[in-house]
Image (cartoon, rainbow, N blue to C red; front, side):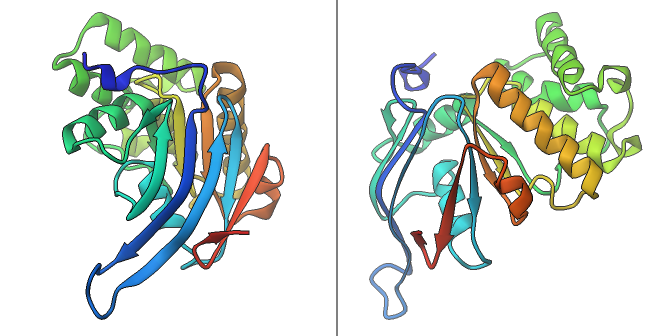
Length: 234
């Protein structure tokens, strides 16, 4: 395994310094959408990101998730400076360090809940195994869905599908979980259940969470809140 996935437990999970992002570089319509973002995230910290539509939250989340590169600035993930890494190293670091939960669960409809949770591990190891299956079962147990392990994902409720997505996001034991409006498509009770689950996971496993939300009541329950307005942190 490449040293790129080495985790320095003595360092913050995430450190951003002077992060800027421009589109259409060098062209007459060049636009800077992030204007020098600075913040950090400690191990096990649960942080909300809030802000109006068009404020730069999605761009920031794509950069933190190593899906896009900043135009300038420094981004360290578990002590590893990422801005000079090649695409292969970024892909590996992302796969072993970051879990993603989106507003829509993105489960594979033809697969069972168990098979969906196993997929990241199968992709990383190249094959299924009893150990992988057992970890997936344990993860489903941790989100309260062990009895539904073999149910086809389309037969689950919206809240249950999102809990499967959370279990899948935890499959590779990530240091950071990025949750982009994970409760946005859920009713109030299911939204609270999903939020409480993420909060519990953060506390029990020491997983850091960036939770993007438009729900001020949920944001108020986080350890801290980062407000993004016009590409800057307010």
